[in-house]
Amino acid sequence: MKKNILFIINPISGGISKLNFPLLADRYLDKNHFNARYLFSERIGHAHILAAENVKNDTDIIVAVGGDGTINEIASALVGTNKTMGIIPCGSGNGLARALKIPLGHKQAVSRLNKIHATCIDSGLFNNKCFFNMAGIGFDAHISKRFADDVTRGLKGYVRTTFTEINQYRSQNYKISIDGKLFERDAFMISIANSSQFGNNAHISPFASVSDGLLDVCIIKPFPMYHFPVMGFHMFSKTAHRSRFVEIIQGREIKIIRNDAGAVHLDGEPQLMGADLEIEIRPLSLTILT
Image (spheres, rainbow, N blue to C red):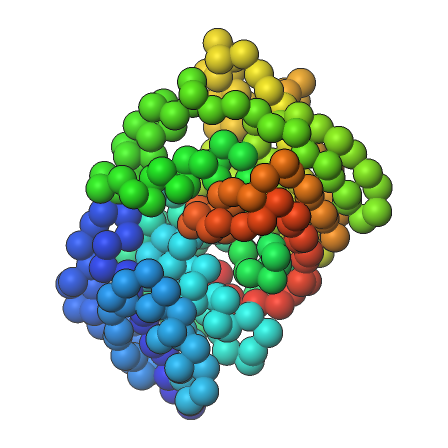
């Protein structure tokens, strides 16, 4: 039997127009396998609403056409259900798609869907809100908040925002519990990694796995600004774990207490949360086409 597949398209993710995406997908999607529909999201949160509405009908597969933020919105509606998710990467970094080795080209990514190869991956809960690739507090959350307000999307805008803010940002003190073991650290940022990378092949936790039932708590300690290029080299060469400024601890249940409420990010999208943070893993809770 043919499967009913719905593409939910974020028209602005990655700063690239996707108005012609349905024509491209219709060309490369195998009509012997699928009956296809296409919907465009219109605002932040709308992709989640569209996905949640279609969980209730006979749609079999819901495909996110966008970046990690769009994936988060749609996957949050599908996690724990019998629906399958697909990804056409169209974001600024495409961290989860890269981790799952999904092709970045639209033609290739659509053609890959025809294989209908499904696997299950873990998801995370951060104060009861879902994330699937990476969550964090500290500098990367601060940058996510600034980047969300930037009219220049894509890698260029992210790099510009980072260099604008890095000299002004100050590290903070955090009290951390990982599976009951207590730590106290001054940190430039703390990333909670389900996959290995932020996106654009910048790997903060090179050995993280989306299906091992564990989250990698990556503590980036305060470092001198002249060391920033070295930190970048470590991430792009998958050697962040070798840096003396990076500490990685795996766990299933994480609690973090910071001095004040403030920004966090979930898959690159900023949120405001309180000082007390609770994070946990939900093993193999999302079925996804890879």
